[in-house]
Amino acid sequence: MTEFLSQMNWTAFLAAMLIVELTPGPNMGWLATLSAQYGRKIGLTAVLGVALGLALQIVAAATGLSTVINSFPVAYQFIRWAGVVFMLYLAWEAFSDSGISSPVKGLSSKGFLRGFIANVLNPKALVFYIAVVGQFATPSIGSLWWQILILGSIHLLVATVIHIAIVMTASSFGGAFEKWRKSLWARLIFSVSLIAIAIWIAVTTA
Image (tube, rainbow, N blue to C red; front, top):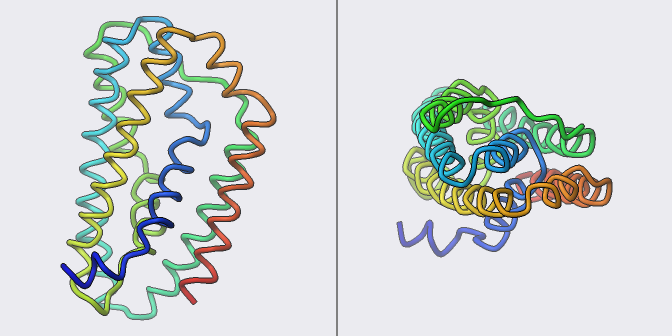
């Protein structure tokens, strides 16, 4: 554990997680729309559903990645490049985001269930934890599963804080927040940042 904490590039990891979560995308758009329409209480219950769905994805990634790497060493290179490609995909998604959000109607329980189901069944979330978060784990210093659990939990904390901020902002300044989310400059800045992360992953994990 001590070796992992000392060798971990926390600055790069936290910067990557922040950029990913601040990038306008489906989760952000849905939470913003839900909160602007129905208020912060319903928005916060949706955040709870999102967090629970992602937590289960972290467990699945931690157990699955460690098994694959231990059984098939060549899988590391595949996962490495999958992480690069996935970050480039997120960059394209951020740039081309039309700003259209899924309509959500009903009470807070539906917000919770929608957030939970959309994330626990989202294959992109699992790929993210395996191919992106997994890049920061180091097989040579210990079991991958607990490294992924730690890193995934930190990402989940970052994501939840940002999601709560989105709910609070959108419930108070819905129109202005949505205008920022759809703006070309915001999408361009975050897409370029994601491309930079993809290049960084490709270079540092070689």
